[in-house]
Image (cartoon, rainbow, N blue to C red; front, top):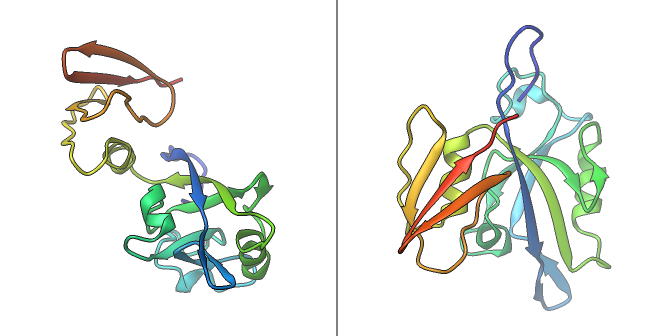
Length: 167
């Protein structure tokens, strides 16, 4: 998601909290990263411009903590537990993610697609419908609606409607 002067930048910011899984003496996150200022950005399959030296999620373990929390391949990690990850080495990012003293990892990630973010926030049992107004409708099996960003909610029986507000 490199910024090109004169071109609009489209990204969805998502907060994700991952509870590490205790496996013997290790705490497992269930994902791998690629990128960093010390890496060749041309080797990063998620960098559109091939000059972006950000930290990206390159692999997700199916059913693992990251998968359950909603992290997706291609997400660009902007923060880890409040630490800025925009201009860091691969090793620095890895160390911040794998700190033994932190059982929970709070990520701030950017995602390229609003549609992708909405699908993830709705869960696997819901089917979003999109049009130019950037809103979705879907039946939610629980009382709450998980959404991305600021949203207004309206309840009509079992149907939930969420309108995304843009600044």
